[in-house]
Length: 449
Image (cartoon, rainbow, N blue to C red; front, side, top):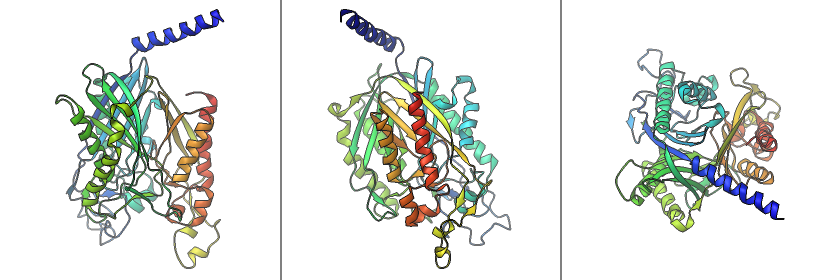
């Protein structure tokens, strides 16, 4: 008994020495990417967004082929970064004000960070899913035709360079920090867009970092599920939408908590299982301001000192390639009349226009585990993923959608058969959804994280 107690005390002491000699370093950065006015906005295929002549035959628009050009700014389009490091391990979380992103962006970003020796599993790129970000960034032809316009290499390279620059700045300005977590229940902001039963996850999770040297709040992340589609469809202004407005409310809140004026806190919006979750109140510039303030009002008590839980300064990460299946459009759910009477097995094959594989990541910060999804999972799929993770010993699982790649919507079998909008856009079917969850299960079983 004495021997066991001795070794237990020795283990705790060794960990304490390790934590002291390898403190958790945190670097936060926000960069206004300033995409050029005239690039079409990505996210809607509605007539309000399309060129009236259908296609720019006369080459009147230098940046547009199918969609109308953007006309200015409602709010900044940012790349926001939280970089963490302990010893030789990194974890880089990035939140981009775009409709989505493709996995090749992650690969190209890693090339730009070559001198920092960042490993593929240490980088998690996410999109806020604003419908007011720049288009022309996708090489996936179906997405180009539906909502983002034809690919422009120079626009992609510009955004890529901005993202790399934002990460480099965060990595160069890291400092020892204490990290805390908290959660809040947010009422009056979300609604379910298509489900017959009003279901959505109204829990917002927060990770916040405070400098050990100055005691100032550096910023953090918010994990919350909501579509970024509160701006009017036909208002051709760049906008980070509700998601960006929530970030700014959090940044202002923590700037006021700081005791002196310095570098402004930075917050990253990490969207959750928002495949069937929208914002209440319709679409208007005013509703964005109203809902973001409502969110902050609901969340503010979570940031009282007594409600902040210290997070153990340990980071781990893992990444896995996932076979989703052959992409195909279930056209029965994509039209009316005779189309809706087609059998479910009639599908339009989209391979090789869309890939058969995608990628997932798991990122652990203390007892929090971020579980990524390469697209837009439904609320129920988010809960299913969390429940599976808890069954495998994860104490605090968070779902992060629109991460590392974009493979459209994901539904379970019951939701798919309902035939709602997300059924039409579930290009890998319920089987693809189950494969994502099973891939996460394999990582947890392998104990590689």
